[in-house]
Image 1 (cartoon, rainbow over the protein chains, first blue to last red):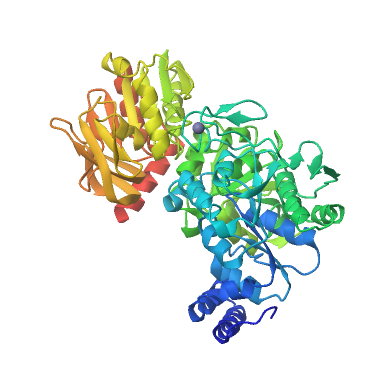
Image 2 (image 1 turned 45 degrees about the horizontal axis):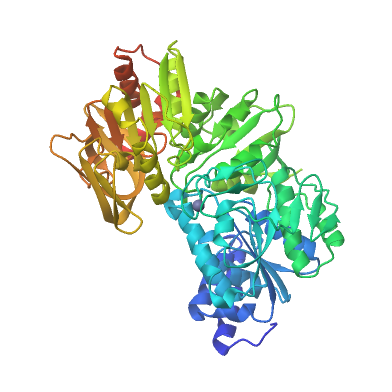
Length: 405
Length: 226
Ligand SMILES: [Zn+2]
């Protein structure tokens, strides 16, 4: 290991590896969470001990965590410890660090766990992408999350952490008021969760490039990363030619590169490595299933759907949308009415998943040409590539049964 | 022209509540009725309308929405004959007072004689309410306990969920309906949307078949099964 572990932590690490190995062997999946849980039960300070001596980047936010984490890992180059399977709570972090001796680690962190994980791993850099409504049946209120983040970065011990923060998201700006921040001015289309001031709740005044409130809360003007048609990081222009689609992925890449800049990674090389990424845990990938060719998008909340819908052309191709409401999805699909599904007018849309009727009723009221199937095997083959938008468990199911093209 | 106004979706729209506006407008339009649907944001003047819709929101935005409504021609228009459907935070702020942000008691608009205090835990989950011969299905996520004043009838009796106080949900007075079923409750319950629409238009409606009928049947079946 990279650092000396206590005897107890050593036992925890061995147990983590053993459980994960057994779980892979028995075909019960990657087992990253199971192993990590056992490890933490044996040694509650296992994460602290595993993190000691490493240079760690944390990535949190409602949307883009997994993608941005993969971008930091790829851009850094060489071996980087990471929780690529998306297990983004401490048990997943333990498993990621047990599996790699690399002194460099990038970890995706669930928004609600950010405080505990920052304290445990003492990261060098934290990337805060955005905050918006997601799984409100569990997290309740997005403003409360912003408050909790703010408390994390107000602690004296946390002042050495460099926070890479999205200056266009008022909730993120509010959350980092007391942190050592490097601001990123990157496109952020979804702002419906911050129309009133996070500081005093009065209306935020907006124009095309800024926002502010009479209480003094305002968009930071000192961004060191600026993404327009060109990307500038710390005054230098960086060439960014991504294989991944969409403006939101350019924004994710800009923030990943800003973190790597803090760690003195050569940005030209890093950008090149990031640009070669074509898929991230199946996201954005074109896959084959039976006779169909399908491009996969994971979209699990209004902001994510808005971003994904913006990449679909105006007419023609078939679109599939699959919505479940199992544990990892949140049990309440009310948010379907916050998604601008009207953008799908002109497409034939096929719906399936546990909550296909909630979805179909939403699309029907939105004037979209919608067809419901009880089983996706009933969808006829389309001549071109179809687009599948799916929330978490529906996406995972489909990923498991389809193949790479 | 039937005028529908969704009030402050930018403050009271946490759970897709603005969808109720879309649903009522669509159900009127598909019956050949001329409709205007206005999203009234917090910096706008409240326009005259036949039906106002209020959604749910977080503590701070709820307080702000209440202040904004108090300073506008809202209560007088309701007294003059406008109809209102309010969910969640909207239900609370029409009342005498509500508690938010810790235990601060905030005066409501006082349009309906109900008061809301903070409950000991949040109510999160499926909601099923008997309303006359109908079932109302929905999802609730709130921390309030609402007590109805004398003469204020609940919307219905609870079959599942916590609603106002564990026994009834919402209220129904004069031209106002309120429920803790947040979000697109009118999308989930086509009969409820049509009850409101028929009342506002003061005439019976011809039947309308939509995808939402299948959704309603499925949700009833799922929730009755428990
Ligand atoms: Zn303010």
